[in-house]
Amino acid sequence: MPVQKIQVQEQNSPVAEDNVAGVLKTELRYSYTYQAGTTAGVTIKSGAGFLHSVTIAPLATATITLYDNTAASGTVIFQSTAMIAGNPCTIILDVSFSTGLELVIATANANVTVSWR
Image 1 (tube, one colour):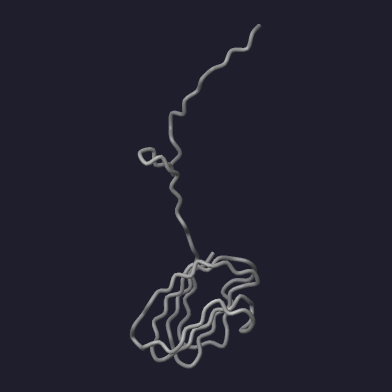
Image 2 (cartoon, one colour):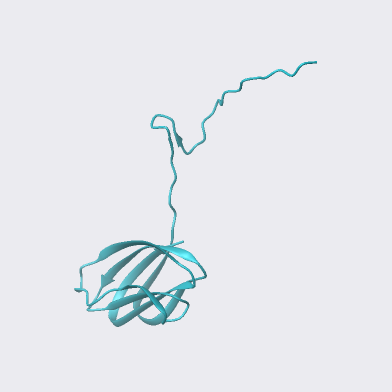
């Protein structure tokens, strides 16, 4: 008996697909860590990851440092200098880290939210 080829057409498109534009839509999701006050070092994540952004609301002239480490030393990913109190800002970094992600808030109090995965 000969083999017949049957043509099949997909009836339902994947949920993430935009048929009009012809592209597959994806949504980036991040975890976040909020830290208030000052800290000599908080390990946000151990191991490799991706740092999306840092949002800082300084209450005084705080210095914020993010390290690629699980201790408050090593490779600096980001460091703010004296920020003006009461002027929150978000900085998009979109960088990878390999060892971990460590946050230090020094000099003065600040409210900091770090978005990562």
